[in-house]
Image (cartoon, protein in one colour):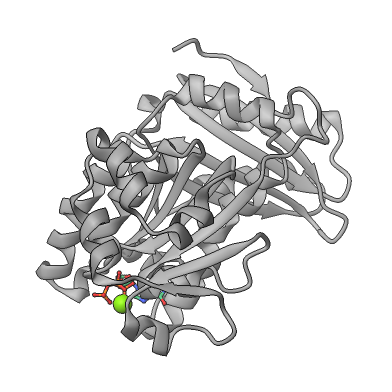
Length: 305
Ligand SMILES: Nc1nc2c(ncn2[C@@H]2O[C@H](COP(=O)(O)OP(=O)(O)OP(=O)(O)O)[C@@H](O)[C@H]2O)c(=O)[nH]1
Ligand SMILES: [Mg+2]
């Protein structure tokens, strides 16, 4: 891959992709609560009872669960015919589909790869955001998650993983329930930031550039005052999930957002990013956010883990 720096926001800026967020399983339904775009939860009966109130959810029947669990890419034509109309309607016609889940349980771990394949087959770009279980949750959950992840990465265009153990560095000593809430918010960051910069033309470019099956990790930082650019980039690269050799990273997606972002700030930020990922192609977008007090930098790196 060519090591270059390229701006997102191509083509007609008013042509934004149609976005949909789908939360799968208990964690996924919690993660899409307060989603800034249209969303739906897919879950078991039990998670439907316990899920956030007032949320649109589809309770998966055993047939749909079994079909998605066993679905391979070659079978997608027949899966599409067999899948219920209500499920197909949730994904058909959307350009960019964000899937949210925690791996390790019995629902999302089994159906997510098939669902990602189906979304892709129906034409959308598929970005999956998944939390990986805490070590303390035990080997059973960890091995279920580890078995599901490669299948998901293969099926989605882009999979962003968040090992929960990383949260112990960011928010130590919190009970699990509270850390899950923190994670629900963190997982929404790339969706919100990317949605603010991507055009339909970008999606086409991204799909050919990153192709299929990219595994990424995220870091996010904020800065205010004189050195806000370097502070924000340092904080982003302090991410507990950048735990691999960054020199190996071949793609960096960077979204810069703030109330007033000027050309100087953008070049400064990109310089700080380049120093940390010397071998990556950098794709960046700038988003103006009138509500922001400071400068925010969100970085997604292809993860060599
Ligand atoms: N971010 C987040 N993660 C959670 C939450 N609840 C559980 N998790 C994590 O997600 C993993 C999967 O849990 P669930 O989402 O309940 O699993 P599921 O897909 O619903 O599967 P079953 O409940 O077994 O049917 C857990 O092992 C936790 O690591 C949550 O509310 N938010
Ligand atoms: Mg559950």
